[in-house]
Image (cartoon, rainbow, N blue to C red; front, top):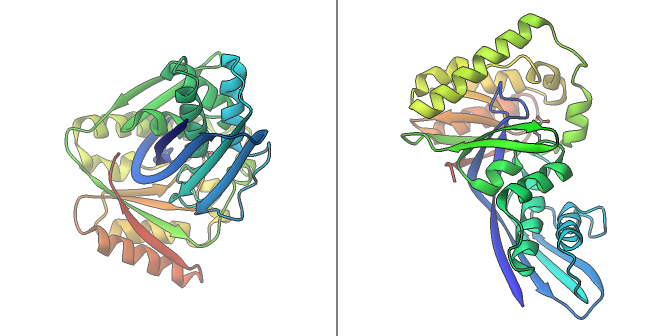
Length: 292
Ligand code: HSE
C-alpha cells in the first residue's frame, strides 16, 4: 500500500498581498507514503533539507499525516514517509506548505479520500498559520485566500497569458517565525491604503494580463520595509531586477528569496539579481520558474 504525490513550491504575498495572494511554481517536492510494520510514523528525507529536517512529532509532514488519521479515525501499525525535496528549505518558496499539503493529501488518499479539498485547505492552514502558501500548493495556479472564523475562502485563477518568474535564492535561510517577529503591531492608515490599492491592482493585473501594471502592483508597505534588515541587499536586488527589464519584483513569502516577474530575458534578470546580492557579500543562485 503505497501513495506517491508531488506538491509544488509556492511564492506568497507577491508584494502587497500579505497572507492572501500566492502562486504555485514549477518546482516540486515528492512524497511517498507506505504502510510499515514498524510502529509510528517514520520519515526519510533526500534532497533539500536532508539531515536538517526533524523526523519527530515536530515535523509538519508527520503532524499533517497524524491529523488526517485522527480526523478519519483510521489506525495503521506504522507509516513510512519518504520525501524527495527540490524546494529550498526556509527560503520563502513554500517548503513547509509543501510538506504539510503533501502529508495531508497522501494520508487522505491512504484513508480512502474522505476529506474534501476545502477540509484539506482548512487543516493545512491550521498547521501553517496562514493560507497563502498552502492554497496554491493544493489548487495550483494563482490563489487569493482569506480567513473567516477558522475557515479559508479562496479564489483560484490562471492569467490569460503567461509570465515567467525568476527566484533568486540566497545561501542563508530565514524562518517565517523570525521574519514575522519584525512586523509591527499596527501600521499607519496611509500605508494600509497604499497596500489595499496595490493588492487590488495586483489581482486585477494578474487576471487581465495587464502585466505592465505589475511594476506598481508589486509595491508593499506592510511587510517588506520591516523585513529588509533581515536580508542584506534586498532593496538593491529588487531595483536591479526592475532595471534589467523585469515586470516587477518582490520578496517571496517571508524571504529571503527575491522574486522577479518577467516577460523577456529571464536569465539576464537572474544574473543581475545574483550580482547585486554578491555586492553585499551574499552568495545566491537563481532559478527560472513558471506558474504550476
Ligand atoms: N504570508 C507569510 C508571511 C508567508 O509573509 O509571513 C510566509 O510563509
